[in-house]
Every structure is written in C-alpha cells, then in structure tokens.
Image 1 (spheres, rainbow, N blue to C red):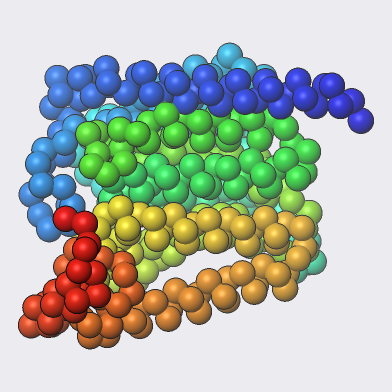
Image 2: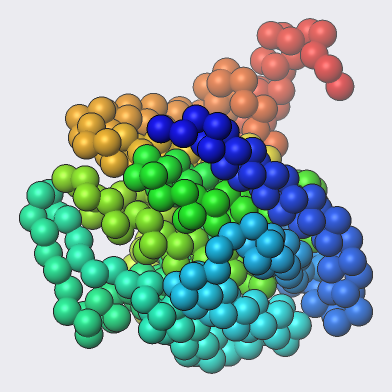
Length: 381
C-alpha cells in the first residue's frame, strides 16, 4: 500500500471540502441579496411555519454553486457523475422557480422524474439488491424504474423535513458523511470525494441557516440535496456486497423516509391529497411537546446519527450490533417521550427547560415555575 499516496489523497480531499465550505459561506450573502431582488421570500402565513417574520429562501443556490464548482475542480467527471450534475442543474432551476412562484406539485413531480431519468440513462442504476444473502438482479427496465423511484422518493423526503432552521441541511450533512464512510470502506474514493464536497458545501451554508436563520435553503436547496444524495447513494450504497446491503440506504435516509411515509399515510387517512401540507411532521410534534427549535433539531440530528452508525455497522455485517444500537436508541427515546407526556412537574425535573407545555397542562405552569425556583434559587436569568 502506497502510504504517501494515501496521505496525499487525504489532504487533497480535505482541501476540496474546505474549498467547498468556504465557497458556500462566501456565496450565501450575495444569494440572499438576489433572493430579496427576486422576491423569493418565505412569509409566515400559517401555523406550519416556525418563523415569525419574512425570511429569504433560495439559499440552496449557494450550496449548489459551491458543490458544482468544487466537483469540476477536484473530481474526475465520469459519465455517471455528469448525469448527476446535469440532473442537479435542472432540479435547482426548478427549485428557484418554486421559491419565487410556488409551482404546482404535479409540475414539480414531473420535472423531478425527468431529472432523475438523466443520471439513470447515463449509467447510475440499481442493478441488483442483496436481501439477506439472496442476490436479486434487475433487468434494464426494472432497474430504470426502481432507480428513478428511489431518486424521486429521497428528493421529496429531504424536502419534507425542511421545516426547522438548519434541520434539512444538517441531516443532509450527516447523511453525506455517512455515505462517505460507507464508500470509503469499499475503497471507492471517487464517490467519497463527491459526497465529502457536498457535506462541505452544506457546512458552509449552515451558519446562516441555523436558528435563528437569516436565510432558508428553500426548495432550491432541499430538492438539490435530496436529489444529489439519492443519486450518489446509487453509485455507492447499492453496490455494497454485504449480507444486509439492502437495508443500508434505508438506514442512511431513515429519518426523512420515515417522516415521508407517516405523512403520506396520515394524509390518506384524512382523505387529503398526499401533496397537501400539514403540521404533523416529526419536527412539529417536538415543537408541540415544548422543545425549542434548537432542541428539536438537536434531537433529530441525534436520531439521524444513530441510524447512520447502524448503517455503517450493518455494512460490516455486524447485524446484532446494529440491531442493538437501534433497539437501545428507541427504548431511551420512548422512555423520554413518555416522561415528556406526563405531568408538568415531572417534565420540569428532566432539566430540558422546555419553552412551553403541551396543551392540557397549562394549569400546572405555576406549580412548575415555583418548583424551578426552589430547585434553582440562583438560576441564570
């Protein structure tokens, strides 16, 4: 093994990530100005939105620009990668128009499907799955349909969780680093470099997007991140030969996919359009319990990291360890959830400093406040 060559590749990768991050960071202010000029402004008109004043969106243009430029400088552009970049360009144009004009959901879906077809036509395909040791190959038609469906599904899943400051951007960063680790374990350095650059671009934008956000990614960013992550995952995650490789991509994107599935079921039960927005997403539930935006985002980051760790251990065929990670995490999460649903006094004892209490417990607020003063007579103001 050429140690010096590996060190050079590592330094080259770090340089690429740093460049992407700095580029996204320095591009965001002019993109914010452009959003104001184009009137791409998110105005809080309903209870789904967590912000109280108009905030420019379309910030994803900075993430895309940083990613696009850095990839062309640092990565060898193969036919497959070119397909991903061309599709991403169309997705970003779609996102810009949607951030300005709020397009019809069916128009967006059609454009997403068209964009997904571009990398698939150029060789980005799910050719098989390994389902608990059973190798299941796909013919060209099935491979095409399955891959397009996967790209469109993850694209929309990431878009749906973009409801709190920094949530979708941070979760996408976690997913990107997870994919990077997984493909590095396969010694797939080219794909690892691409997703590392994507993560760097997200990190450069995140200081402007974390709570309190001064700019949103908008559909420009959320659709781009979902599209790019799903496309690149086909190049890496679906190529894993592990015994349980079928589950690895689903674990990496578990949080946005789970939120999308529950949202779809919820809307169908209530006889609503699956495109109809509502206030029932995971992040809304956490806010309703009483968490601040920062607390809710931190919790969902933790959930995403837990699933990513499980995906990495799955890739090494450590099935028992992966299952234990998931089980322990869910048990701890369920225990905390039950406590938070209990009386105000018990919730206060958690030390989480919830900003408000769930509906039905308002009468207990004074009791909780008094107890807080007794337990913390010298608490900070």
